Image 1 (cartoon, helix red, strand yellow):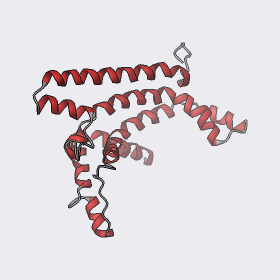
Image 2 (cartoon, helix red, strand yellow):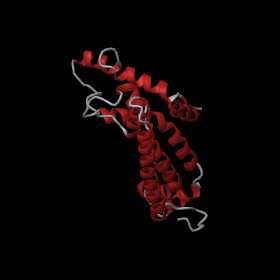
Image 3 (tube, one colour):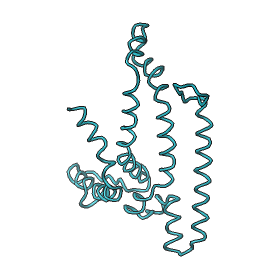
Image 4 (spheres, one colour):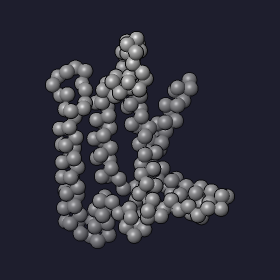
Length: 198
């Protein structure tokens, strides 16, 4: 029962709509009434998680919180398919837990690692909610990501053609990075059916 509870609580952030979770984190990060502001008052500190120097890390924390459940669920499903006999055989041969992790676990879940890598790469270029809702691209354009620029160009500056061109450039960049990822998988992704992909 506790294992099911852990999986449910891990997946819960992904089930919350992205805009809602972003608004929640906006309240947490609030300097006056948020959790960070309350901790500053309690500890007598002056920590600003929305300062330009750490703002991208704060936005990255929101994205990580939103998508960790989805990725972990896939990782958990992949780990459950690894035969336990492989670990038993490795233990008999004297392999340590670290060696088992590097020689058995990582190779056998490498297709899932590759899948999560590609999907999160695409998601990273599409990230919009955090930078737009919390900071609107500021301060001093610290969180003006490509997606925010495309949106502002189309719906604030009314330059739809320019915005479309930017979107195509972003698409080409993502496509090139995805192709590089697919080419590189031949070097590190292991497919058990050995059909020539790895």
